[in-house]
Structure formats: C-alpha cells, structure tokens
Length: 200
Image (cartoon, rainbow, N blue to C red; front, side, top):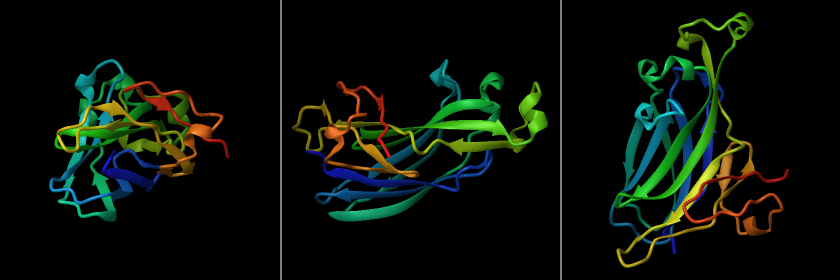
C-alpha cells in the first residue's frame, strides 16, 4: 500500500512567457511518518527524438514528512534555450513532474506544453532561429498523463503498478475511487502511462 497519496496539483501562472518560471501548488497526504525525504523533480523534454535533450529544471527534497496532509509550492526555472534543438523549440513538447522515495519513483505526471508565438506575423512566418523572448508557454493542464507505481516502501514488498489518477477540474489532478467506473478510462497495464480524460 502506498504511503503517500497525491491529493492535488495546481498549475499556476498559465499560460505564461516561455522564459518565466514553472510554478505548481502540490498537495499530498502521508499515511504514516516518513523517515526520509521525498524527492520532487521537474523535467523538460527538449526533443521527442532523444533523451539527450531532456533538462532537469529543478529537484527539491521535502522531509522528513510526518503523517498528515501537506502542501507546498514548487517553482522551477525555465529550460535553457541553447539546449533545445531549433526544430523542436516551437510547438508541442512535454514536462514531467515526478516524485520518488529512497530513489524509487512512485508517481509521474506528464503535461503537454504548447510553445507558440503570440504575434500573428511570427505565427505565419516563423523565423529560422526561434525568438524565445516572444514565445508563450501554455501547459495543457486538463490532459495530464499519469503513471503511479507501488514501490518497496519498507524494502520488503514487491513492485507492482497501481491504478492511475484522473483530472477533476481545469488545473488539478485528484485521486478518485470512482476511476474504475469511468466510461472514458482506458485499461492500464503494468508500468504503462495512458492518457486520462474524464467527462465533464
């Protein structure tokens, strides 16, 4: 049984200029005291063609964490434009928010991001070299891709995949016991991430 349940993730300051920090309000619950820190990490996927362009934007440690509900703000710097391939700078990419305990990841939330120019002239005639200062970042917070893993919290349990989580409003992800009854919920096999969409 998982000792940490994700209660809510709110994407803040969205949409925003490309060079502005990422901001999240994260709420989670611990079912019992955790002696070691939780590691929260945010990764920007610079290119779908290679993980070599992934950038770890920030990594924060929260803990030791007592039993109960907790909330904190996670802010991370924007990606380094010089490390993004020119052909992947404008358009859709992904950010990954993950949490690990004892170096074992137990939840990963992926958000699609659309980077686009706000000026019509640049939209119609994109410059050969991206002008990052004129790009707007829009996180598609209503369509997260979530994978949860049951990990070896006590170093004596077998790893297996848990049920996914689902969206309940425009900018948040919330656990639900009704997820298995949703007509739009796809089947999720072990260690596979699926799109999760709920009916309004």
